[in-house]
Length: 317
Ligand code: AKB
Image 1 (cartoon, rainbow, N blue to C red):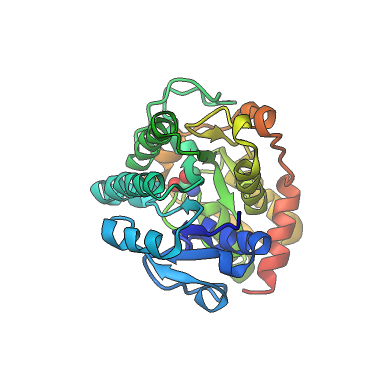
Image 2 (cartoon, rainbow, N blue to C red):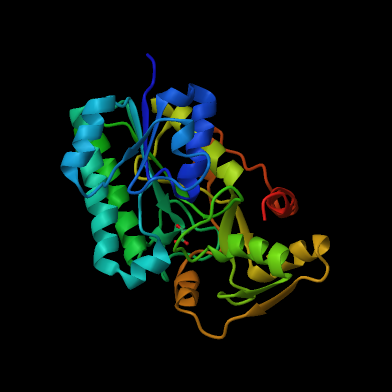
């Protein structure tokens, strides 16, 4: 069967990279990129099909499904943790109503596979902080976190009740050079590279020793594609898989950057609301279920991430 893959939220940090990767595998015309606005990245509209989609507008979404008859859908449109705390009702609405619209249309249009990203934000202050297991106490205290947790329950529900093949990953913070993150707590781990190269210094909004799980974008995209490629019977978890990455602090990241840019200087903001969010999240994650079920394996360690980020950003900053 020839695939037609709809990516909703294609202009974001993950979407930009995922569309490029999917076009590499399936061909440009097989991937319909979509977002609420025209893309600003050069890899956007001019390179392949693009649609304006607002996930809250059921009719607009239905028209796009009718026009393209997608066989797979990746729903990436979401409001992340930091912005979610500024606009809690909008974050809940977008993250939840948007998901339900897409799940319903996927059932109706007999979409064969749906990908929806969850996050380490589903864990909360009473979850184990180190090596956080797949199943444990989950009491997220951000709107983003509990919208993702509720979304996971909906995904599993649509799989069980309607047989919809929904697959999901709990992404850690993602570090990549091709597109910037927007409105998350882990955004510092991308900003630090831009500031290091542009200004030689960075004021971090998280404290020096705030450990959080992070992953290089190349690994995250590879994990996404291999989850989606795995035979359905290998996918034992229909809520969302833990994905560990590496446990990174601002201080360890700065130390690694200094090996390349010895004059780089990091300072820390005294008080920032994102600190409380970071403190409520795990410091490291156990992703043995992903390793066992669909042979997940991380490739990028911290030295490799830093070298690749600096090398690629140097060319474009
Ligand atoms: C955020 O910081 O909100 C996101 C996430 C960890 O899901 N990057």
